[in-house]
Length: 547
Image 1 (tube, rainbow, N blue to C red):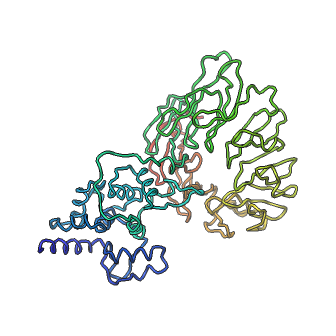
Image 2: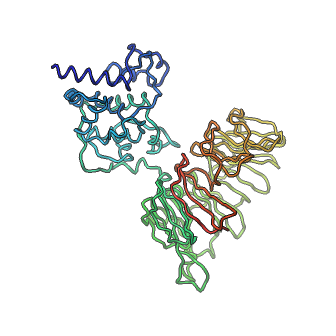
Image 3: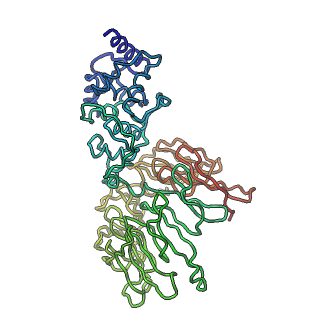
């Protein structure tokens, strides 16, 4: 009994050096916080304590050791194992000894570092007797009701769980309260896969990243910079909807000029659809357009396929068809735009490939928020999926498609942002400033004086001052900008803080956590291209011939 008292005293006194000490039964800083009741529950259960100043600090990040201490103290069987531990020089050691007994995926080498939500999912699943990697552990938490996740465009996904985000004290105790089990279990040695994994995967997050060799050939790398597909292909396009395109020359009809055979690979670099198409579009919403053009000298058909290669729509030979396709857009909200090259007009097909809006427009955009911006005889309007005009704009107006719930329109001397009913939600004077579409709650505004750019919120307030010589929309929390007195481009966050200093030139925006950069030095014969993450760490780089 004396040994148990000594160990318990040691545990709680040592935790006090890193872990908080309770000053009062109800912390002073949790009133109105979303987790206030759960925090009080955890304090009452003696899973966690507040700080000596009477606060709990619910938004403070949690280290691996701190979360492990909470978890082990939650379960009676793991807590009893804790009380058997010998005294130690470091307060974390008894907890890691218990974790080892239950085969939890933790290491004392990272005990003081903040722990990510993804690692927490893996540890929680392990404490319930499951051996999953991070993604499958997140799915397990969803299925068991331990985490609800957050909706991403109406869908709960692995990404919407925010696996790379840092765990806070309030989130930690909420996870523990959600467990609803009585004892900790031992994690098995064999790694498992959750049967409902595909249900929570966002196809666009399952991506490889396009790379180019000095010879001008292409391959793909993963998000860590590891080359998954060697740069052996003469044609390739970036991943979209979970698949990438690779192609090589079709030597069988070389006499008819350069033609290629294209196929699709997944994020493991494996063929999903082997090279068999003469022309293809990227997949979008699970569908892609294909053509047999270039496969041989006779066949020339086109259609729509799904990711299993099933033909959804197949039109044999363009000749004699009432609508002959020249160009197509990808699917968006179940609709895809196409051009009939016999009349050079645009229309829309549905997911079955049926023409639902006949070709009649000179210019079109993808559907967004149920509407598409179209132009006919120099007049702009927004139509619904039946081709009905919902919002008609006066002659000589200018507009952009819906984005972030609103669309930018300029009518005469007034700039407006309208909702899908056509109602103006923000009106601005046309004072020579330039405006654009909203993205992630902000839009680029160019001031007429000084030709500099900043960012405006949906209330019309400039929240990031106009100090940039160029600026791009926010994507995944970051935006590409240029400064007047510096060469190159940098990245800013939503507060306007430069997180990557101007040094590079970027190709596109951030996608799946990475961004492609270019270093073009006129004094060098080659151009360097590569990929970096949001923190500016270069993951892959190579030289390519200068243009």
